[in-house]
Structure formats: structure tokens, C-alpha cells
Length: 117
Image (tube, rainbow, N blue to C red; front, side, top):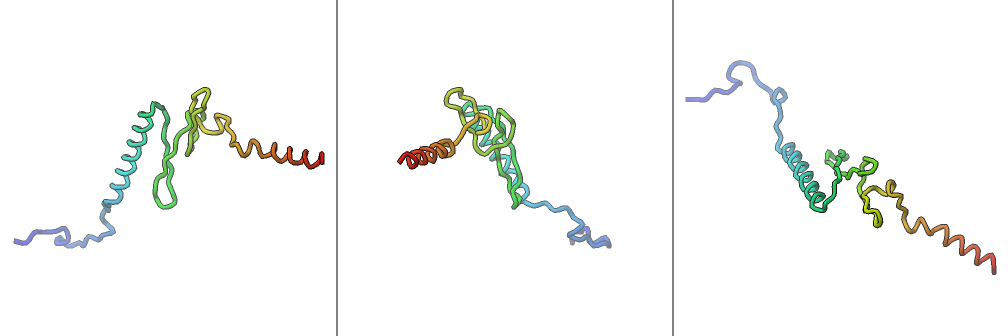
């Protein structure tokens, strides 16, 4: 005996009328949740309390960010202050790069030496 399918009752059902169930959507969700669990466990293992945030990329991917504990803004890099041991972004901890700090001093001392000669 032949089994019946929905199209045997007169109205043809089109693909566009059906809900799509894609394996890649499930895999994307699983990967995202797996990454989140792994990141959180690594952060907890280090003894830190840092939140995570996500943003969408141009190609429907997801990028993870740290949430700065000081200002609650997202950041790709956080720093641990060597004296206070506070964790935060470069702005909150008022950190500068060495090159930026000494650039004016080097140019100033060179100008003074040239002027004295």
C-alpha cells in the first residue's frame, strides 16, 4: 500500500510555504554558546570577574569582547595595573604608550642640542 503525503489531498504545498530548519543555524548557536562557556571558564580560572559582550560581524559572525569592569564599555584588551592590581581598559587605568610619552621629549632635547651648537 502506498503511503499518503500532504500533496495527495489536492493542494500542492510549496517549499516557500514551509519553515526552513537549517543545520548551520543550530551549529552557529552551539559554537557561540561553546565559545562563551569556554571564555567564561578561562576567566574564572584566572580568578577574575570580567563580563563578556558580543557584536555581529559583516559576514554574520559573532565577535566577543571583554566588558571593562571600571566603565562597562566593551574592549578587546584589558590591563591589570601593576601597583593597584585593578583590571580595566587603557582609558580607565590612565595608561599611555611608551612611544607617545617620550616622543616630544626626544624631539625637544634634539632641538636644544642643535640650538646650543
